[in-house]
Length: 120
Image 1: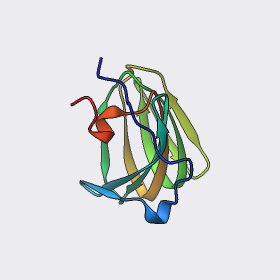
Image 2: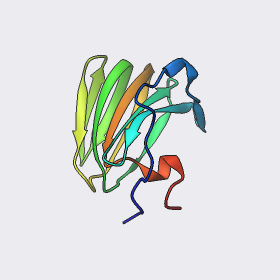
Image 3: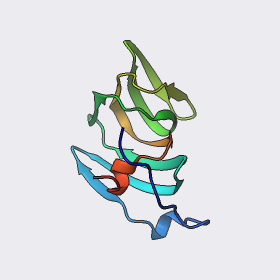
Image 4: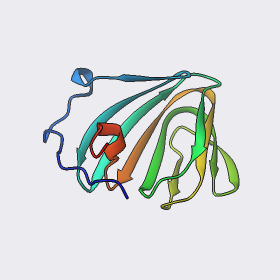
């Protein structure tokens, strides 16, 4: 297991002032509020971009803020749109294909140290 997050975000996070990271492949993300036990991240997807199937030890709950996505969780696929959400228990395979440009709001527990460069 990776090293735990040792830092936290400020109490108030203004999205317009936060850095947006280009992940390539039509995907970019913005880390918002976080502490050792919780993290929220906004992820933009261009149509056709793919969040490759992967797994991690974090619990994840995701809200579809906008767009349309085909989401894969533990062998099941479902098309989700704005307002829908999904939950991923630790260690389950999951991924997504963007069908219409959109944004996902990911929450993780504990925080993703790999997103912050901690413990690497």
